[in-house]
Image 1 (cartoon, rainbow, N blue to C red):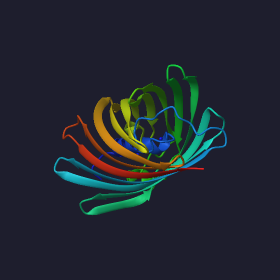
Image 2: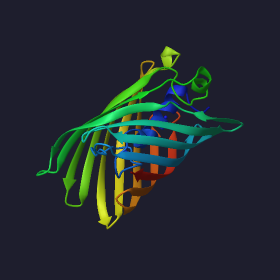
Image 3: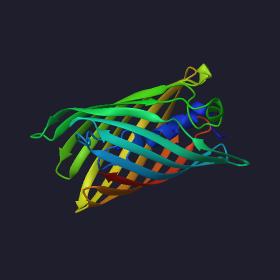
Length: 263
C-alpha cells in the first residue's frame, strides 16, 4: 500500500501524505495512508493505478488537484519488496492551471519480524523521491532536490481483522533551501473483515512539518471500502478529510479509487 494556493513545501507535503498509499503499497490496502507489513513474496508483482481528487479551501480560496498515481511493486525476496511510483497531476486555482508529473519515487519495504502465533509483524519502508525540474518545482508539482522518508510499521491481527500502526520521518528538499521541510508522521488504521471479499478501513493520523523555524501540524481521518473479487484483484474507494493549524487554516476533502492487480 502512497505529493498556487500554498507554498511549494506545503503543497508537496500534503500530496505526499495522500500518495503514501501508492508509495508504501500493501497487498490489500491500496489506498490507505497507513501501511501494513505485507509484502509480495519472492517473484511477486503488483500494479496499482489510482484516480485521486482533492479540494482544499484556505482564506476564501479554493484549490483542486486531480492526479493519477501509478505504482509497480516487485517481490525481491520473501520478505523484501522494491517499488517505483509516479503520479500525473492537474492543479487548478482560480484563473490558473498546472499540469505535469510529480517526483518519481523509488524504494522498498522489509518485513523483518513475523510471529504467526501472536499475529504480530514488523516492517520498515524507505523511499527516495527523485528531483523534478525547476519549472515543475515552481508549479508546486514536487521537490527539485532528492528527498526521502522512512516508515516503521507494526501490524497486529485481532478478532475483527487487523490494526496497523505507522511512525515515519521524512525530508523534503527544494532548490530554495529555506523551503526545505522535515516531516514526522504517526497513524493508526483498524481494518474490519466485514464479509467475504469485503473490508472496511478507518485511518487516522497526524503530521508535523517543520520549515523555516515554524512547525505546521496536520490531522486527517479517512474511511475506505475494499472489494476483492479474487486473491489477485482489489478495488478500493475511499474518502479523506484533513485540516492543519496554519492561519488561515486549510481544509481538504479528497476521494480516491484504486485498482490493485497482483500477478
